[in-house]
Length: 288
Length: 346
Image (cartoon, rainbow over all chains, first blue to last red; front, side):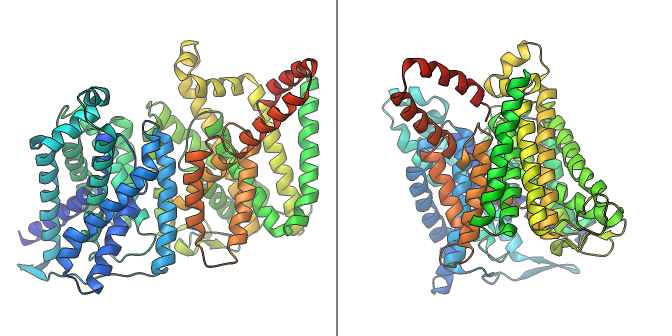
């Protein structure tokens, strides 16, 4: 029984990590059909901001929940204005340009922070369940992932900003005819996605050490979660993160952590072969 | 294709190769020149499938690494290094053909194609990185995990198994192979198969309506490109005398794409020039530590995507043609137009 709880928490934890790392990408891809290959570096940037803030004496939770999203969101704003906005509608070119951005940011990180691992201590202790220990931070992450999904749903479904964003993405020409500034809507959406990435990167920083190339560890997982999820931002992310998180955690328990990662990637290739437009392209049509 | 075209093609390529083979060792040392030639071949493989077939593969490094590993593993296990050489082309080509069939018969398009190729590269990278223990072995060869496989036999001169091909010999061998591959691709593009590949880029739907099996031609072209990348990997293994999982890294894939797009998409000569130039730039930048290398590569890629969409070679050619046209009379203009039709496949 205790073991079952531990396994359940482990599985939920890996789903939560997938949800967090892919939510920023999901907003940007799902709303704007732009693939941001620098997403991994946005996450890393969030992590570095949190670490630097913490080292300079700021409260850790303030750094993770406020400072990192704000800084990365601003960075996303700059990137959108300088690079991405010239390339809307040219999918392959955006992928190439953002991949260039990813390389450039990796290079910049190693020039600024050096080619070493840095990290911050895990702020929460463990909980005892029977004979086992559960990390308190795992539970915190699960809660955070649920909160992020809830906030995205509420913003998209129940606020005026979400209505404008959805309208502008569905029919840009019509939205413009109603007097909306499409360019600003895109800019804000991109910045919001970047801010989510910053939040996720900061939340994950206590779990894994950060090095300039950390982004590469996230990007493929985030990428396949979003693409397999399909067009719906929230439903797609939750469903595919749930699927891949469970698969990778089960294989990690049975074989090794590399076995889990490889199982995840193989599952993604098979899934895309079977459902070329993602899970929500076939099921859950029309969900957010 | 008549024999006169064939003779001109062969003549041009041979002349160009001889000039390069003579001049390059004076600009950089032979060791570096060999590596640049290997890079050029790798860029050529992507330049063909992306520039002519319109298929952007984000994981060309997978076939490159696979070629290098196949050579290393086969060279340790078999007696003749030349058998390994053959396998190093066939295995990546077969792998690319199968992967291509999986994607194209599933009708995956651009973004999904990019994801699948990227993910496959990552799987290979993770797998070879995690094979450190003695339990991971193929025949007599240990896979060696992060450290890779050192100390496999390199190519020897056929007929005398003790004379290894290295140094200047390896350079001339590599550049001759590059010339062969380049010539082969040019002739392929003039053949019916090549025409169909180009028509896939131009209009896939129309090609299909004309009765060609698009899925088959895409997979076949993908296999050709994979085989060339594998050959480049095999030559790299002979040059470096070690293969490591780094060959499969995402950075490697990115670099190949940058070479091709900087050199010029839709040409064969462009990617080779791009690879040689940027490979040399990387080599020169390696001597200083102020600016990080991937920072420069990244900024370069952004700048090219934003401002120099066509790449170096097409841009330069266009300006050259503009100058030529201004100075020439009507009569020679007609001639240059005829030339241009032939030169379109360069």
